Length: 112
Length: 112
DNA sequence: TAAGATTATATGCTATTACATATTTGTCTT
DNA sequence: AAGACAAATATGTAATAGCATATAATCTTA
Image 1 (cartoon, rainbow over the protein chains, first blue to last red):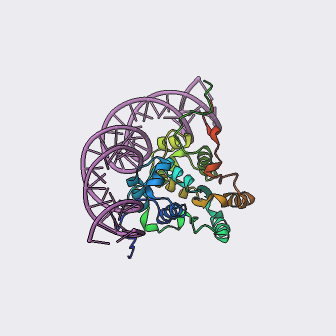
Image 2 (cartoon, each protein chain N blue to C red; image 1 turned 90 degrees about the vertical axis):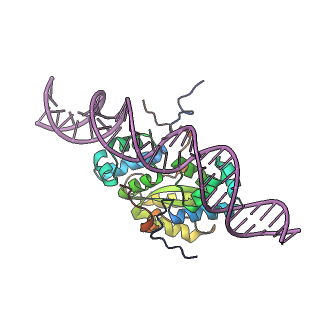
Image 3 (tube, each protein chain N blue to C red; image 1 turned 180 degrees about the horizontal axis):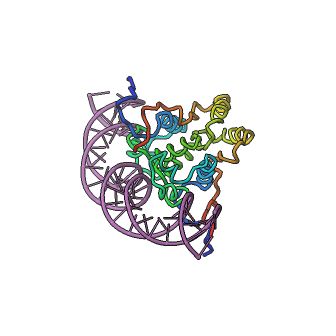
């Protein structure tokens, strides 16, 4: 199925991040219900987050990231390419390390 | 019960991240008003975010991170130390790249 | 096909961030 | 001390994620 990014104004998390969350969950062999239980969220919420229908709060996102064995790094943009190279070089567990700036510009912007 | 440290229900962003946001803003020589204008937020909001009184929504945080020339990376936890080493090695502008997992329980930030 | 498991959608209701505005406090400079 | 700039605090309203529940759609497997 074509995922035309434009037009479909999903104000969900960046596409790549959602893919990483889904990949992380499946890598651990968890269902949305199981993941939800570990972070205290109902399955519909996990579904909404993964599908980009809702944006979780930061703390909720942090919980998800942590149980999925990820972490969020705040990195100076000039160093992002180097960090990415390092990560990709070691890429062992699929790809879960894209920067937010790499996401398609059409899916997020200032809401002013 | 001896409180102070734990139990401090600061639902703000992780201490380190707030410090990085502040450091980034000051590195660019911006006031809270100026930063707010660039992301479309009033000064009191910037204040609340920086002081840990409120947690911005993800998109708001992303806007702040971007204008401050940072980026958020979702990294497999096993690779975080390597990424940190790389970043610290290049440490150009102080420290603006701690991982969220690094904030220990004593992240309590009520310095008063 | 049928049954079960998994995921997606729908609806109220609650909680809290976002927002606007005003006020206050603090710091620095003159 | 006074003034200007910066940052923090306070209040009220609006928008939205969180939540619980129910139900549908999809996928898997016997």
